[in-house]
Length: 133
Image (cartoon, rainbow, N blue to C red):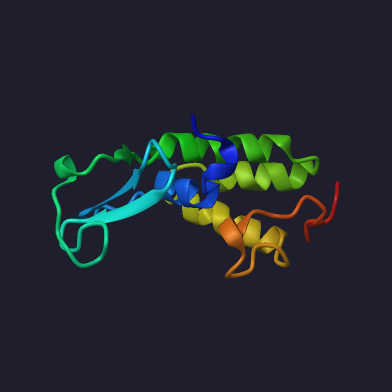
């Protein structure tokens, strides 16, 4: 049985969030927990094409966007600063919600959402730029 410590949770999170439509798949070895990246052109090793049916790995399907959307709603609902929470709630209304939410987070938490920050998640100790009230 796999132990949690054997899994690379960052790789699994990347696989779950990969919404691209390219001809590739993320796979996991159920015995070792190792994550592999497969493409139709270069297979798993990056050089030799192989059919997915010929490998003994389990596909990791990306989570649907409605789950990511609900995460944004939950995040906005849990903020102690009501003004920031309302602003984020407005940002996720209609088309382009993910982009607007990311931009609003960057404006409120510029130190923790700068480019290159893993997943752009604000640190719990960051204070928003918006005045409280």
